[in-house]
Each structure stands twice: as C-alpha cells, then as structure tokens.
Image (cartoon, rainbow, N blue to C red; front, top):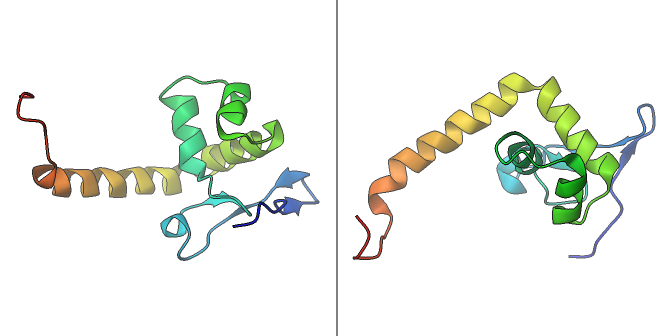
Length: 104
C-alpha cells in the first residue's frame, strides 16, 4: 500500500480521524494510516509514553499523535466501549490460547 499523506481538517489544522469499515475493524484511526486511536492512546495512558515518543515509535508527526490523543480524550465513551469490546473478546478466547508446557 502506498504511503499517502493524511487528510487534514483545515479548520482545526489537525490530521483527520476517520472510521472506515474493513480497516482496523472500523475503529477510529488517522486518515490514510493504519494507526488506530487506541494504539496511541494506550501508549500514552498505559505505558506513560510522551507524545514525542509515540510519534517516533510509529514514525508519525507530532500533530498526528496530538490528533489521536485529542480524539480519544474528546470521545471517552467510544474509547471505553472499544476497550470493553476487546476485553470481552480476550476473555472469550482465553481458553483457546496455547501456552508453553513449562508455564503455569
């Protein structure tokens, strides 16, 4: 897939966050990228990474990371619903996971 420039919301000057069926399961992401809002948000909240570190990790611009974080903080109900969905999937599939025999 060719690396295209993301769309920018010219009114706010930030890269756009989009939902596209069939890309990341329709979860919010940077337009033109497969970087989901939750990817950056989790790095920021759970790992304590700075926006600059997240930008470097994903090879994205700082404005793109700020757009991801702004979206997540402006849509807490959506982010929580995605987290609940993923926890449910993890719990439902836990018994099917393979583990090495020497791990209890």
